[in-house]
Length: 309
Image 1 (cartoon, rainbow, N blue to C red):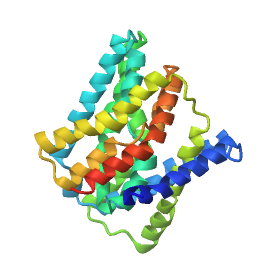
Image 2: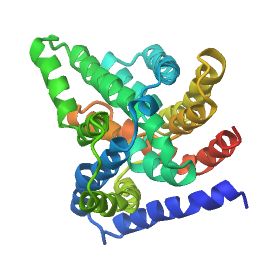
Image 3: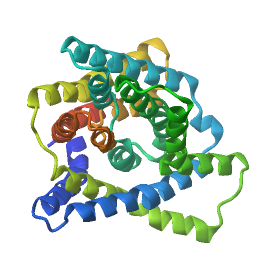
């Protein structure tokens, strides 16, 4: 059996365990929500802060990386939007479909997998990609849904978008870690041990939460969800690979992390946004379920490819 697949099996086995716990109601939706909050607000934040605080700014800020990732992601975003418009979907539904096509499960799946398979040094490129996803595309989808609903784009709307970014624990933890690193402050051992222990819960907790959350996802609207999964798992990594390797000359290791990031399945927060605004939630749900299942194969293939760089 392929060695990369063997390395991925434990990660997807934990997702499967969470799914089984969710389906059998041993782990009800309320427990899944609580576990997700613990991972999101505490464990993952501790991990991100610790890694960011130990990085230098030169390791984090990489203009060719940002440009290549943004270019490839925007290309697929526009393609998914155009296909939705051709199918006579409105701006709101097109925004959700485009979000499904480019926003991967970086926080709950990418970070745990890449730190182990690609090494702790992958956290710098991961943070850059997260910044693009969270600051640009997470804001863009809210703006497009608001505009598509006929609401005026007032200062209050932009204030709400900005405030939601400042409340995001991943944004806060990364920012605080970078500031800590900028001032070159050593992390005291008790604090470092605290962050290490708490951060260690992020990987198993996040993977289990992914599986448990899939238990209430529907595979309805298979045709559209399959198209969006194809965008996310195949077209997105292909697009960023083209820009990283042939246009902007991104360093090989950073390009490898970027391509692997683009190959991640659709993020769960896309469904949360779709459900909150009541815009195509079943379509987003199906895309998350189908892309997560298919990513067992596609992520294995792409990781094998990028680990040869």
